[in-house]
Image 1: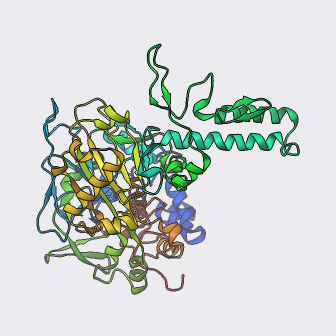
Image 2: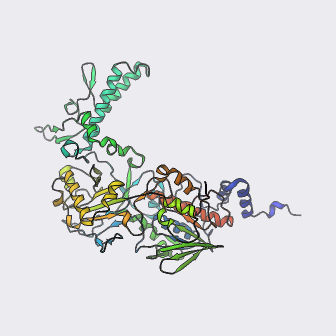
Length: 572
C-alpha cells in the first residue's frame, strides 16, 4: 500500500497549509515551489514577474489604462492570462500627462479644447523633444525603487530632477515689501543665528552636565562650521555678510569678479526677519522630507515615457501591452455571478472575465453600479478625500530665469495662490524652456479650479510677476495652458489626501476589505501608502495581480483580511 504522502499534490499541500497556518504560510510555500515567480520574496526584486503560464486559461478585465492598470495587465498577460484593458478616455496614461505641441485636452465643463502650442525660438522648433509640460506627475524620489527599476527594465532613460536650487526665490506679499528673497539667504542666515544661540548656551556652561570638556570643544567647533560663526573676543557670533576670511554663504547681490571687483554681499537677515517671512513654516524645509531629499529623478523627454514604456512591453503571442487596450470605453458597473464577473460598458457592451482589477479613484469606484460592492464598502470609498491639484504651463521667450537670476532648475515659492513655479532641469542655456507657472493643491487649488481658463492664466502671470518682474513679456502668455485635475473627465482630483494618516479609520477599513467571490480587486495609487506617487500605483498593481495569482493557485482560497477586493465586513 502506497504511503499517503506520496499522493499529496502541491495544490493539496498548499491548501492544507492555508487552512492551518493562514495565507502567509501558503504564500511561503508557493514561493518555495517557485509558483509566485523567480525571487518573489527576494529583497529588492521590485519588478518580479508572476510565474509564466500560471494564469493560462484565465481571463482578466482591467479597468483603467493608467500606470496601475498597465502594470497589472503586463504581469497578468505575461503569466498567460487573457487580458483586456478598458480605458474611458482617448489616451492611456491616466494622470501621467505630458503635453507637447498640438496636444489637446478638455475639462468636463469646457465647451472647447485647450491645445498646447509651442513657438520656434532660436534653433529650437515647436516639436523639439524638450518642449513639454508634465501636467501630472513630474518627479521620482530616489527611494521609489519600483518606479526606478521599471524604468530600467523598460529602457526609460532618467535624468536628475533638481528640487531645490538655493538660488530659487521665496516671495510673500506680507513680508519684505513683497520682494522675493533667495532661498540661500533665508536658510543660511537662520542657520547662523541658531548656531550663535547654541554657542552662547555652551559658553554659559549649560552643556557641562551633557558632555565632557573635550566633547564641548568639539561641539563648539561643529557650530562654528555649521553656522559660519566668527570669534569676537571670547564669543562665537554670526557675522553674516560681515564675515571675514571666508566666502559668503548667503550669496552676493553683485558677484565678486576680477581683482577690482570684491562683490557686494546681501545684507544679513535677522532672526526676526526670517521668522516674519513665514517660509520656515514649510517651504524652507521641504527638502528635509523623505520624498524631497536629493536625489530625485525624471524621465528624459517627459514623464509619459514611463507609461509609453509599458505600452511597448511584450506580453507574448506577438502582442504588447498597448495591444490589450480598448480606448473610449467607460464602465458603468460590475456584476459577480458564480465563477464569472461581468463588466458593463457605458455604451451597452458587456465584458466577461474570471477576474477584474478596478483602478478607478475611490470615489468614482464607489459610484459604479452592480452587485460587486456592498453599501458599507461604497460608503467607505466615497469618503476617501481626493485633493484638488492644478498646474499652469508657459513657454519662455528665453531662459530669463537663468540669465537674470542664475536659477538652474528647482522651485520658487510664493505665499500667493499659484504656490510654486518650477524651472526646467534640463537643456541649460537653451534658447527656450517650459515653466510650470503654477502648481497648487488643496484649498488654493479648490479656488483656482473654479476660475475660467483666462482667469487662471492671468492669475499665474500676476503671481510670476512678483518673482520675475516683466514676467508677462518674458513668456508666451497667449499660449499659456492650465489644468485642474478635479475637473478632468474620469478623474476625481490630484491624489488621495494621505488617507492612511488623514483618514486612518477609512484607510483601515478599506485595507481590510474581504473579497466578494474572489473576483474584483482594487488598484491605484490611492490604494497604497503612497497616494499621488507613481510608486503607489505600481505597488497596488503588484498587490492586485499577486492576489489573482494566489486565488488561481488556491482554487478560490485567499483568506480573510486580504486587501484589494470589493466588500467590507460591517463593524470592522
